Length: 278
Image (cartoon, rainbow, N blue to C red; front, side, top):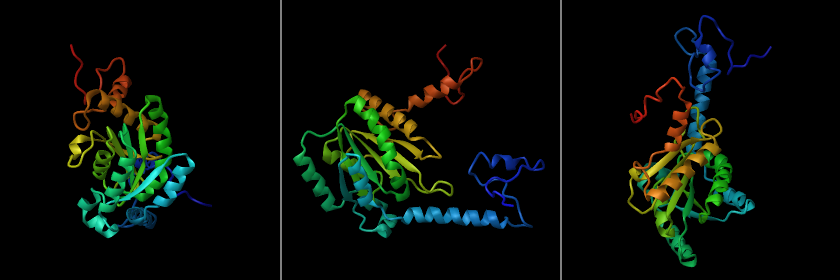
């Protein structure tokens, strides 16, 4: 008789066990004497190993480029100033800028394709190439459905090995892009080694801080869906074009409307939001 370790039977004496069916959080693990049960300890070690592997997994940019080509999307491979993974992890500043060779490659491309674009799309491995491998194609498919409806011009997909978020600002500036979005692997957690983050900037240029960017995080099957992430990103893009800004001064009011619509008829709205005008 087999027992499902991830779905333990409900114990009336410990109602927290039922919550394990609803969350990946490590709750109601039980104990053996003064220690955790062997199964819970092994599960923790496995999750920790997954997170470590995600950080060090090589970026398969050639494979991703081939998949993009099959979908009819052009791509351009660049590299940050971090020569290898060790350098990338120890010197975050090197991951925030292009190598001299890659910067020249992008300048040459911009000269051959003058006029700039409305949106530059960047994909970087970040701290989880696994996230990029799993989620880039399905997310781009959902995003591009809405981009076409807006009529925006788009750059080739710029693939950056050993890249961090700020490298997108240099890419957007060199391409003369009005906006830039970077898809990047987020720092793995013990239950989320494949979380994809999206960072959006209006008017990208070298030297901008995080205050000028908008972030949408935890894009994955167990987190924020591709469709919802694309919807939120397109809302930010439209508002950025209208108001000519991004970052802390551009709020995701699409989400606020959803919270307000969920409030019951007898409720005054979400207490986290500003009270309605009298």
